[in-house]
Image (cartoon, rainbow, N blue to C red; front, side):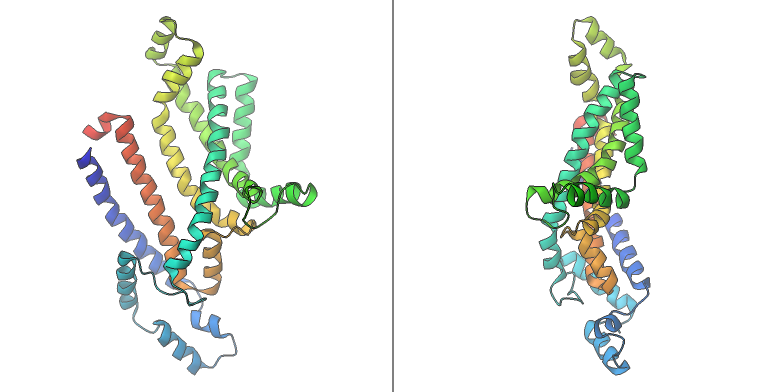
Amino acid sequence: MVRFLIRRLLLTIPVLLGVATLVFSLIHLVPGDPAQAMLGDGASPQDIAELRTNLGLDRPLPSQYAAFLRGAITGDLGTSFRTGQPVTLMIAERVPATAELALAAMLVAIVLAIPLGVVAAVWKNTMADHAAMTFSLAGISIPNFWLGPLLAIVFAVELGWLPVSGRGTLAHLVLPAVSLGLALSAILARMTRASLLEELGELYVRAARARGVSPTAAVLGHALRNSLIPLVTIVALQFGAVLTGAVITETIFAWPGIGRLLIQSIGFRDYPMVQGCILLIAVTYVTVNLLTDVMYGVLDPRIRLE
């Protein structure tokens, strides 16, 4: 198991290096000058040139890239052009909000998807199956940037049951978590159904029923447990999708997380902040996939032996 874990850790190094390089390259291709954005359209060329020097933007790109990599390795992501505060500190202040939203969305997705997938698989080709898959199709088809405002209009503006924006109480979390979690639950429900149907057709399930095991125990205790590996994959990948989808959701509901900070920083051409936010999302994504690989090894020893 130790060798398996070390091998997976080593494989993440080139991935993170590639992500850091891509982030640095793309952000510098975005049109606009941060110095011009900070000083305004009426600034003189001399003032803009002086500010560019103070920000280090006049240095060659390879020099800026080397400084970015050194900072990323040591945890020093530079200073925000917009606020003058350390990027690492500002991101750390926003991480709890994004983590709270991501976990709540995943909880909504799992609570909805697993029962729907089990019902659809057990009662295949019945009205229950068709209803569950119709919900799944609708969830996949509805874009997040449309569902979020719709939920806000219905439950916050028209009914007045929930707050429309901000963070503070559990009520503030409901709309963004549901908006983000519904699409994830649709994908997860379809995967649960497909994986469970495959396991229900295996001989060991029939053997368990022949030994007198109840239908519920055969489904939940045998078939569902053995269908967890593909579900773990989907949950892990969807957690990464939560982080990227949170960019839209946090903007719609004014949720003070990493996604909203990223959008604000892009508009201001705040290179260090944009690089830091995207790098954090990428590192989280890679970490989740690493943990997924480790979970594979725990659930199926054959993977460790390979």
